[in-house]
Image (cartoon, helix red, strand yellow):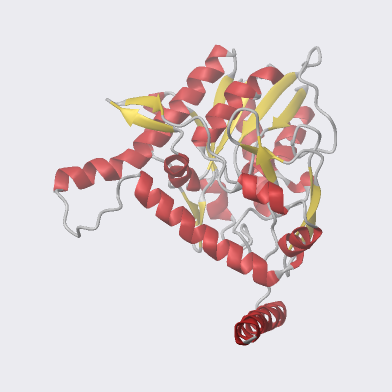
Length: 352
């Protein structure tokens, strides 16, 4: 009986802490509620859950995320067969590409599409972005899904988290200066999440509980940092390492990103499609944004079409361009700037 009462007492303490933790967060420090619904694809990486509808809620906004039967954030179905006379833009990206934290008509992809339509271009945007994707998963998504849509232009929404995501996934590596496959599957915690999602109490916690979201985000951040350290071979118990070895390790991450984007370009050209890279800047209080893109990608001599919105962001740095009290995605204002810049670049460089 003593053991039973000890267990019950321990359970009561845990429930007490969780309950008052939830109350405290809701009143004094509300946690942004941005659930991410992903599932396993047939080709070994994460995809968006098809036919989903869920809410992203913070103290500043409440938006609805909806996906079609193929997991694309869209209010309509998009068949694989391309309509006659239509130019298709297939988008690869992460949560920025999906348009997290804004409604669908406020995303930069919607603004880009409208700009092209107003210029007389008959276009259709196919958004294959998935929250959490890096360039490695984007390459695989292009090979398995993007090609089915007969794209005329591939838009890669590059973001600085891609650097770590590429290493963390371990889908590709570098050998003798070349990109080589490493793993065929990267589905972090997807199987566990799919099992838990079968229970209504878990779905409620995922979308409504501040305490759960705080614990999940903290655990995810710690896990990501550990995986990056281990898989990039920078995790070393010795505090002192050889200078040459340190340099090689420091170069590995940007080199891997460059090789992956280069391979995406190769695959795009094989589909008779151009590649356009959007450099999504990191927020900066006085400059509006800064670029963390590897120079090898942004260097014009390497032949990439890269759109930078740094000049425009600099002009409007006094305005709110990022949701700084949430997950630092673009506000509607920033999305409009980015979308118009993309449309101008595509038209000026005749990419369609």
